[in-house]
Image 1 (cartoon, rainbow, N blue to C red):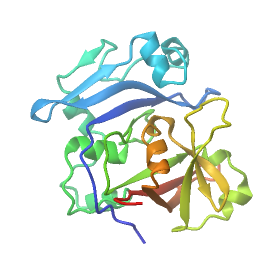
Image 2: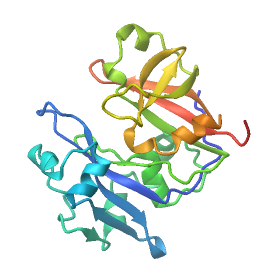
Image 3: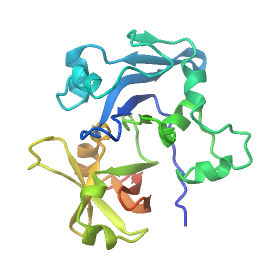
Length: 245
């Protein structure tokens, strides 16, 4: 049964992300640009074109490393640093029209009720707007959200966890988050835990606020959905920020 998001807040910022093609060994998701909501519902696209800025968002990896894997910018917008004209209209083509009869079914996959009012910007942030065969998507960094608030996140690295742990998971079971202080690749990594077993991580682009939420015991979560394929299983977590301890 779907867990409906009851407390939603307006997204103010999201990342445009790119994933290298299947033919490459490195299948990481790269944060390649900031997307901001401007005046009069316009969107502002700002590429990370400076090496230091790009590395800051990509674990020290350079823009050249992404380009070597095939990144050349979003098809509709050149690698000029900033774009505003047509950004909203172009990105919204990644989503089904709100007038489609099956649009409520699309929303349900992300625990969003058809009765909930979401701006175009928040709709992109909440759904990721990933297209089949397309290497781009959006990631909400979850910054600035205050309790009460609900959202859905995908578990990063889920397919790399042991089969026996993945097969033991049950929809609806409680999950917790822990700071992975022993992680040599990312000192800010947040583990997603099920009954003492790690099932993956919070996307590194979404970890900023988790240490505070964990410390103040403001976060509750459960396993919402398992899908994907045998080769690429996926897990989604319903997260709630709580008002009190």
